[in-house]
Image (spheres, rainbow, N blue to C red):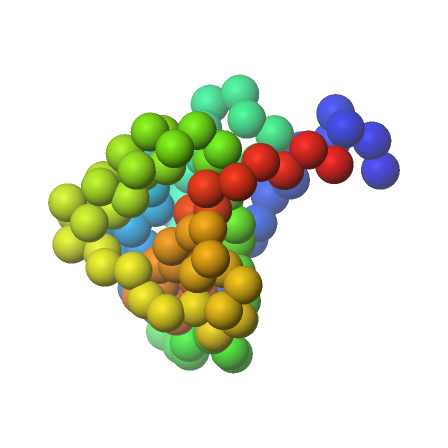
Length: 131
């Protein structure tokens, strides 16, 4: 594994419109691409242009995937700049997404956790990750 690799976090969803609103409008990610009826699947790719990561959400008509298996299924964004972190929190809340108490209290010390419509959680952490 090398630093130039790209990361795709891919998962199915039962809540297409709500997921788009959470990740695009609340988190501020851009719709990087989409597809329809690719071998029976539709997909959305959301991320920051040029970033080494993006999310892919898929749905298969007639198939139910169910909620996240636990409250500790997390994606963590590290925002070390306090103003940028506060702006990200304000954007989430302005779009109707309220923080939830983290399953692991560690994440509440310097961050806020938000839960998407499928029960997966995103932590906006006001800290640096330098490893």
